[in-house]
Image (tube, rainbow, N blue to C red; front, top):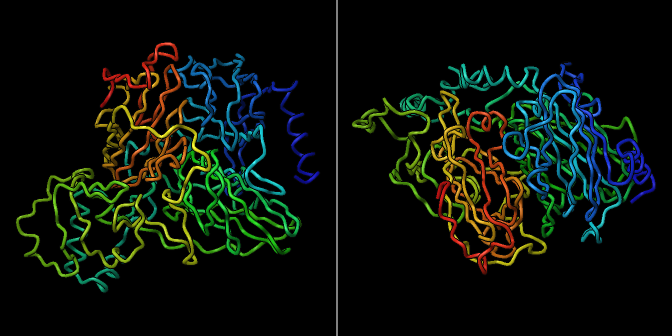
Length: 578
């Protein structure tokens, strides 16, 4: 690294650490200025985002957290492998931190990479209580770079988290600013015909939802490292530099599609774990995920870091430049995608298997008239009634021409494509650089259906909300295969605390190791977990208002290394959902 970067790192350590491995963090009321609005929020050490905590693999860290609020707080170390008592989830791993008190976290650092930390109390995280973690590996990195920057994305809303939750409960479409209009109906009628458009609108109306139901919360300002688009966070480079960008999505609700026009990005880490390098022009980062990319800059011009929300309702913007004050063109946002019947219908696993129970395979809505709808009663349908229906062969005006991604429903309106026709990262591209675990057969499978009712704004797993659910009981030493079946219209980033999630991309021992698994509508995605962490853990959707509404489970790991049955074959069938 360059000398200037080392100096900055040392300065950061000096401001946080009383001595090696010890850090002091205060939880404070702060003012957050997005460039569009100023609001009171919650931050760390007097700011939001909080400091970048820099650890080294193999060290033991002590972190003293002082609560200066008039309410309980907590800090969860997202993605870190540690004793469950240090995980920071009130009601599961510890009681929380009372106003005026200091709680001391102490745990070993057993990994390297890019992670983050945030409050797990109420809506303090979307209100500003988050920061970044960078862990230096014990050995050499398997890739070269000259300098690095954290690029921490978030969606800052002028409303508080509590107010947003109240409004969503009152009307799930409260923050949807992309609802279709009469003008859209007239335009679509000109393309597809009046009756086909009318029938399409009737079907969506019967489901009590809209094609624009992609983002629950719009009207936010997207930030990079706490700066809005007009404030323009800038990272400097020198000609010829390889720059490592540590992207972290700390949003409450927003997925981002990230590109740097004019620069190819090489993805080298996903969720803190090294992957076999893959060159891309754009990638989608789910809520709570991290991606590390390297860009090689061969000239002395400025480049825009551009992160559009998945629903195209806002964007974050920053700049890479050889000198302060330099800027590059900011792209126009692309048209907002719309959901299709494929997103609403038959569940499809990432291997291409179609689990639809009803086959409308050759229906062409472009030629439907009223007679075609005879005998179809949609009167009692709600937003989740379309689950289990296979519309994969429907013609919805060209959806089938979209490139197929194995982690998106065939014909989905959410299939991502790069802006310049180049390479868009897929989960299927991710391969571990070095296997973390021996590849072995799972001891059992647990199905987790991601369920909900958008109209009432209730979210659940297997149709049961957190407060009504029994814990999922696992046995130390087993290898569990989780089957996520998304029966909702929303994309859910599922986060397991305390243990790694091995995403099944069909690469066997090279399957990538992650801490968040994003599950798109109408898809079935598998992950496996080596159950190697005794204690009680959280498992939840990382969309803040989905977790708070019930898409959450407690995981209980029984046993320990001394009680493990040989080869980890203990069944552990009692309790939980299996």
